[in-house]
Image (cartoon, rainbow, N blue to C red; front, top):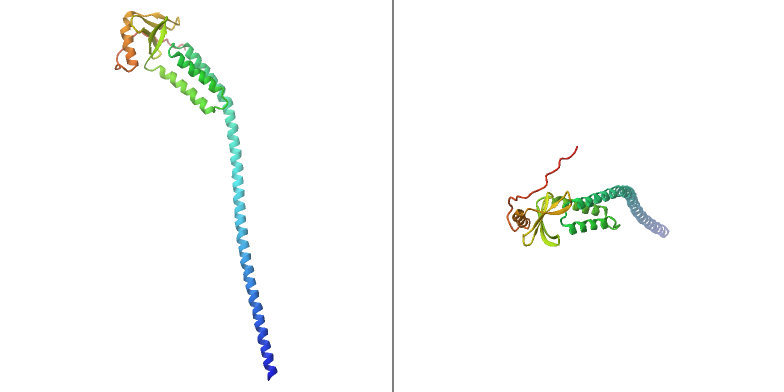
Length: 227
């Protein structure tokens, strides 16, 4: 009877040990499964990240090629546009030289500044083009309305009156002598003394010290354009 009890007790202990080992194996299995799942998730994340990096690298390569093409296009544009702007500047300079002799210092300084700008390697092509167009616009605006400035004619200080680009007159400060610019001869000639009043009125209008009104002044007739 005692032997049978010992045998049963041993069997129970063996079963308990076996269960313990099973439980341990089950715990290890669950731990390994969790580690496998974590590793799989990390692998998936790394795969997604690698795909994203590849896509980013592809886009960067495309952008680099696009930028390179733009740079090359800009270089070609600069090579073509800069000579054109230089020709435009030369045309403007010749026009100023042949135009009525008004605001000579201001206009010459503007041309000199443009010449320096065109040869400045630090200045952008856009800035050069903008300033050149600005100079052209200023010259266009000179042809509209009246202009007045203090100058010197025949050694006397005078007030000059510009009527657009049609005519240029000068009047001494004492209003005792008047001139008009003769474009054909390229020099000042005496004007009819009766013009002094109109010139003086035009000067006041140009300086906004008198309201706009009708001026009676001789201007050169426009020449017909030859076909």
